[in-house]
Image (tube, rainbow, N blue to C red; front, top):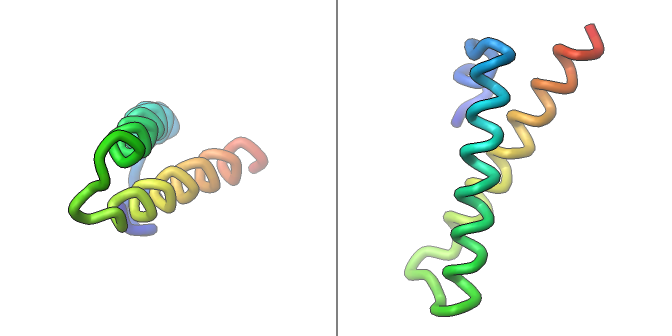
Length: 63
């Protein structure tokens, strides 16, 4: 997800997406430990999306 897409989501949407992407990140990591992924950069992309969502959620809570 891009930064602009993250800013357009509501707080509830951010929370839902954060949970979804955290689960996806855990699943990708587990799959990579068992059998190496064809594209291991997927893990990095999902991890960064989780960070974007968490950062935006924190920023909204602090305002």
